[in-house]
Amino acid sequence: MLAIAGGKGGCGKTTVALGVGQALGTTTDQTLVVDTDRDMPNLHHRAGVDPTPGIADSNATTEPATVAQRATTVENVDVLPCQTASAAAIGSAIDSLSRCDRPVLLDCPAGAGPDAARPLRGADRTVLVSEPRRQSLTDTAKTAAMSRALDAPPVLTVLVGSDGSVDPSNLLSCPRTVHIPSVSKPLASDLTTPKYVDIANVLTKRNT
Image (cartoon, rainbow, N blue to C red):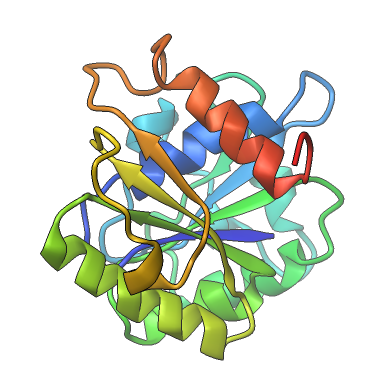
């Protein structure tokens, strides 16, 4: 289970979660992307699904994955929205999803508060997402420190809207960086699709 996290809202975490989810999934083994941002849930918008059913519709007898919806904007991805979900429901869903037998990506809230810590606490590793600007990178450095403290260390950094000129490795203490260029349709671009495949290869240790 991977946390897709960053310190700043709007830096591209949800888009990266869906792009990586598409690269990791197959027609018979879909990736599950889960929205854990209860204050600003937008995974359902980007994935082209209804805001419900979602986390709030799962309970002790209904596994969260069983109420997931198939994304319409990307292939090989199921999504679990968190519209109206409480903090307790999100925490319970993350605990249940730790037993899931397919890739799970947690689309995390920004910041360094309890809501941001909750998915990091349940994840195995973290993918850091940032824009190639000083303030965004500084905020993401706080996320990197929190992920290490919660035993979900960063495995790579994704710089969104990057021309490749910024190297965040020293600031974030994360040796691997993938640069995603600015494009009008980042989930359906000949420029970005190979980048998401590269990320999937790193996460699964293929071709590395």
